[in-house]
Amino acid sequence: MAHDVIIAPSILAADFARLGEEARAVEAAGADWLHVDVMDGHFVPNITIGPDVVKALRPHVKIPFDVHLMIAPADPYLEAFRAAGADYISVHPEAGPHLNRTLKRIRELGAKAGVVFNPSTDPSVIQWMMDEVDLILVMSINPGFGGQSFMTSQLKKIETLRAMIDATGRDIPLEVDGGVTPETAPKCVAAGASALVAGTAVFRGGPEKYAANIRALRG
Image 1 (spheres, rainbow, N blue to C red):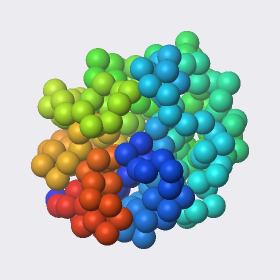
Image 2 (tube, rainbow, N blue to C red):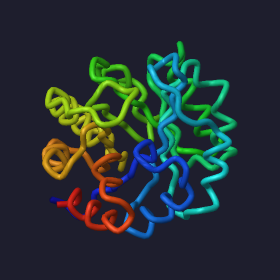
Image 3 (cartoon, rainbow, N blue to C red):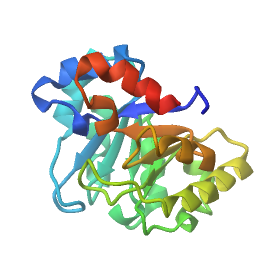
């Protein structure tokens, strides 16, 4: 498997009592990005963290913060997450009535704009605005909880989105989140993914295992 694949550990699987240490540990272990799952208990059935935690974590590591907003509406919180240190801000098309306006606002704030696809969301929602997209995230589980099994049905979607990206000639990361393990990671990359989010697969076994876990995902 390609060794230039981006690995973005999800802090959802970290020890929440030691988030700063955990972030530093995965950066030292070779993580490329830090993936931050923001859930509101409304758009998805769980509640996680807000901008203040992102702000508190930001000084601990130098790698980009990949912030996935599983919240609706998302627009009122874009400024706060950008101010807290988010480098990528990704939203779901279902989280507001005007996806294009949301993406433009994220870019105006100086962050990179991402679109997240739930398992049932069709790739066509971004067909006419690929120029506004800086990151595409495919959920290979239903968002809301970690530790779920990978949905192989999403591999075809990854292939479709890879073709859409290639047609633009732009280098848009194609990220996969959900049930990513050393077994499923090669399938994602073969389908066209260039970035992998992993929670349990990275944080399993404690800090002394993080580097080996990340290497295993790279293949």
